[in-house]
Length: 161
Image 1 (cartoon, rainbow, N blue to C red):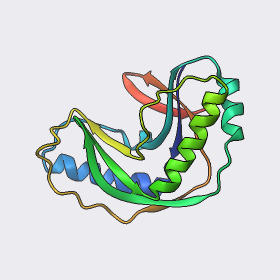
Image 2: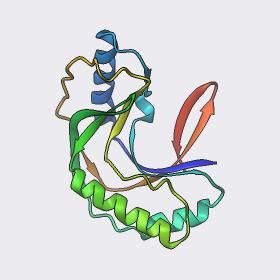
Image 3: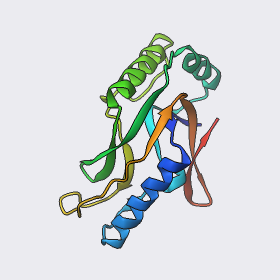
Image 4: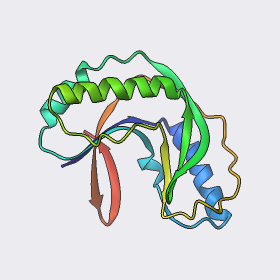
Protein backbone atom coordinates (compact mmCIF):
# COMPACT_ATOMS: atom_id res chain seq x y z
CA UNK A 1 0.00 0.00 0.00
CA UNK A 2 1.27 3.51 -0.87
CA UNK A 3 1.23 5.52 2.37
CA UNK A 4 1.82 9.08 3.51
CA UNK A 5 1.12 10.97 6.74
CA UNK A 6 -0.73 14.25 6.43
CA UNK A 7 -2.88 16.95 7.92
CA UNK A 8 -6.31 16.72 6.31
CA UNK A 9 -7.92 20.03 5.43
CA UNK A 10 -11.35 21.18 6.53
CA UNK A 11 -14.14 21.54 3.97
CA UNK A 12 -13.91 25.34 4.33
CA UNK A 13 -10.20 25.23 3.48
CA UNK A 14 -10.78 22.87 0.53
CA UNK A 15 -13.58 25.10 -0.79
CA UNK A 16 -11.29 28.13 -0.68
CA UNK A 17 -8.59 26.18 -2.50
CA UNK A 18 -11.11 24.94 -5.09
CA UNK A 19 -11.90 28.60 -5.87
CA UNK A 20 -8.20 29.25 -6.44
CA UNK A 21 -7.97 26.22 -8.75
CA UNK A 22 -11.04 27.38 -10.71
CA UNK A 23 -9.57 30.88 -11.06
CA UNK A 24 -6.27 29.47 -12.36
CA UNK A 25 -8.15 27.45 -14.98
CA UNK A 26 -10.22 30.50 -15.98
CA UNK A 27 -6.99 32.43 -16.48
CA UNK A 28 -5.68 29.74 -18.83
CA UNK A 29 -3.16 28.03 -16.55
CA UNK A 30 -2.57 24.50 -17.80
CA UNK A 31 -1.44 21.52 -15.75
CA UNK A 32 -2.59 18.51 -13.77
CA UNK A 33 -4.67 20.16 -11.04
CA UNK A 34 -5.20 18.49 -7.66
CA UNK A 35 -8.73 17.27 -7.06
CA UNK A 36 -10.21 19.34 -4.20
CA UNK A 37 -10.99 16.17 -2.17
CA UNK A 38 -7.28 15.24 -2.30
CA UNK A 39 -5.91 18.56 -1.00
CA UNK A 40 -3.82 18.09 2.17
CA UNK A 41 -0.50 18.94 3.86
CA UNK A 42 1.99 16.08 3.69
CA UNK A 43 4.13 15.65 6.81
CA UNK A 44 5.98 12.50 5.68
CA UNK A 45 5.79 10.41 2.51
CA UNK A 46 6.43 6.74 3.22
CA UNK A 47 5.57 5.05 -0.09
CA UNK A 48 4.92 1.34 -0.54
CA UNK A 49 4.77 -0.47 2.81
CA UNK A 50 2.90 -3.15 4.72
CA UNK A 51 3.95 -1.82 8.16
CA UNK A 52 0.62 -0.13 8.91
CA UNK A 53 0.35 -1.25 12.53
CA UNK A 54 3.86 0.04 13.30
CA UNK A 55 3.12 3.31 11.51
CA UNK A 56 -0.17 3.69 13.40
CA UNK A 57 1.60 3.11 16.74
CA UNK A 58 4.36 5.54 15.82
CA UNK A 59 1.91 8.29 14.80
CA UNK A 60 0.17 7.73 18.15
CA UNK A 61 3.41 8.62 19.96
CA UNK A 62 3.62 12.08 18.39
CA UNK A 63 2.45 14.84 20.73
CA UNK A 64 0.25 17.41 19.06
CA UNK A 65 -0.81 20.64 20.70
CA UNK A 66 -3.58 22.05 18.45
CA UNK A 67 -2.69 25.16 16.46
CA UNK A 68 -4.13 27.38 13.73
CA UNK A 69 -3.03 27.61 10.12
CA UNK A 70 -4.19 29.78 7.26
CA UNK A 71 -3.63 29.94 3.55
CA UNK A 72 -0.39 31.67 2.62
CA UNK A 73 1.47 32.73 -0.49
CA UNK A 74 1.90 30.71 -3.70
CA UNK A 75 5.22 29.18 -4.64
CA UNK A 76 6.68 26.56 -6.94
CA UNK A 77 9.13 23.67 -7.12
CA UNK A 78 10.12 23.26 -10.78
CA UNK A 79 6.73 22.61 -12.50
CA UNK A 80 4.72 22.19 -9.29
CA UNK A 81 2.50 25.04 -8.16
CA UNK A 82 1.76 25.11 -4.43
CA UNK A 83 0.33 27.33 -1.75
CA UNK A 84 2.15 27.98 1.51
CA UNK A 85 0.51 28.41 4.88
CA UNK A 86 0.63 30.70 7.87
CA UNK A 87 1.50 28.75 11.01
CA UNK A 88 4.42 27.15 9.21
CA UNK A 89 6.64 27.09 12.33
CA UNK A 90 4.21 24.85 14.23
CA UNK A 91 3.74 22.63 11.16
CA UNK A 92 7.53 22.36 10.87
CA UNK A 93 7.76 21.31 14.52
CA UNK A 94 5.01 18.71 14.05
CA UNK A 95 6.69 17.29 10.93
CA UNK A 96 10.05 17.11 12.75
CA UNK A 97 8.52 15.26 15.72
CA UNK A 98 6.79 12.81 13.40
CA UNK A 99 9.90 12.20 11.31
CA UNK A 100 12.03 11.66 14.43
CA UNK A 101 9.52 9.06 15.66
CA UNK A 102 9.50 7.29 12.28
CA UNK A 103 13.31 7.19 12.31
CA UNK A 104 13.41 5.77 15.86
CA UNK A 105 11.19 2.91 14.70
CA UNK A 106 13.13 2.28 11.51
CA UNK A 107 10.24 3.29 9.28
CA UNK A 108 11.47 4.64 5.95
CA UNK A 109 10.17 8.00 4.71
CA UNK A 110 11.29 10.40 2.02
CA UNK A 111 13.72 12.60 3.94
CA UNK A 112 13.66 15.62 1.63
CA UNK A 113 13.62 18.81 3.70
CA UNK A 114 10.11 19.62 4.90
CA UNK A 115 8.35 22.66 3.43
CA UNK A 116 4.75 23.17 4.55
CA UNK A 117 2.71 23.50 1.37
CA UNK A 118 -0.49 22.42 -0.33
CA UNK A 119 0.12 21.17 -3.87
CA UNK A 120 -2.27 22.80 -6.33
CA UNK A 121 -1.01 21.44 -9.67
CA UNK A 122 1.79 19.61 -11.48
CA UNK A 123 3.07 20.21 -15.00
CA UNK A 124 2.57 23.97 -14.78
CA UNK A 125 4.68 26.59 -16.52
CA UNK A 126 5.43 28.40 -13.26
CA UNK A 127 7.31 31.22 -14.99
CA UNK A 128 4.11 32.70 -16.45
CA UNK A 129 1.53 32.58 -13.69
CA UNK A 130 -1.21 35.15 -13.23
CA UNK A 131 -1.45 36.82 -9.82
CA UNK A 132 -3.38 34.76 -7.29
CA UNK A 133 -5.93 36.13 -4.87
CA UNK A 134 -5.79 33.94 -1.78
CA UNK A 135 -8.92 33.97 0.42
CA UNK A 136 -8.42 34.31 4.18
CA UNK A 137 -9.34 30.70 5.09
CA UNK A 138 -8.16 29.32 8.43
CA UNK A 139 -8.42 26.02 10.26
CA UNK A 140 -7.35 24.34 13.48
CA UNK A 141 -4.86 21.47 13.24
CA UNK A 142 -5.71 18.96 15.96
CA UNK A 143 -4.78 15.60 14.43
CA UNK A 144 -2.65 13.92 11.82
CA UNK A 145 -3.79 11.15 9.51
CA UNK A 146 -2.29 8.09 7.89
CA UNK A 147 -3.36 8.20 4.24
CA UNK A 148 -3.25 5.75 1.37
CA UNK A 149 -2.84 6.76 -2.24
CA UNK A 150 -4.48 4.64 -4.93
CA UNK A 151 -5.90 4.87 -8.43
CA UNK A 152 -9.64 4.22 -8.58
CA UNK A 153 -11.26 4.25 -12.03
CA UNK A 154 -8.25 6.12 -13.39
CA UNK A 155 -8.38 8.85 -10.73
CA UNK A 156 -5.90 9.33 -7.92
CA UNK A 157 -7.66 9.08 -4.57
CA UNK A 158 -6.29 9.75 -1.09
CA UNK A 159 -8.11 7.97 1.73
CA UNK A 160 -7.54 8.07 5.47
CA UNK A 161 -6.87 4.67 7.00
